Structure formats: C-alpha cells, structure tokens
Length: 76
Image (cartoon, rainbow, N blue to C red):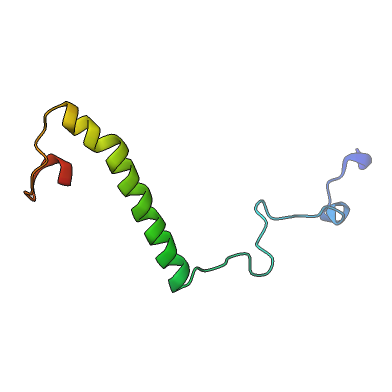
C-alpha cells in the first residue's frame, strides 16, 4: 500500500502547457488606408465582371427588364 501513495510532491515533474499557444510577437499586420483602397477597387472589378459575365446574360435570356428603375431585380 505504501507504493501507491498519491502525494503532490511526486507530481512536480509534470509540465502544464496551455491548450492553445499564445501568439509570440506581433503576428497581425493591420492594413492601412491604401491597402484597403486597392482591395476595394479589386472587389469592384471582380463584382462588375461577374455581373457582366453571369447576371446580365441570364436576365437577357429570361427577358427580365434591365431598365433605369431603382427597384428592378438587376439593381438588387
């Protein structure tokens, strides 16, 4: 019975590490104005090209009006 004693002194060699490692140093790079500006322009170009390649032909084939109104389906 003496061999099975559970004392806190015998557990001193156990190392406890956090489950998720904390970031070391500065791993985040915040985008400034110009990086966000160029990303916005790139997004505009991508959305406009998808609109002209996919949405407009579908609306044309389905004979859905593409007029100048604000509440038309193509404006949404």
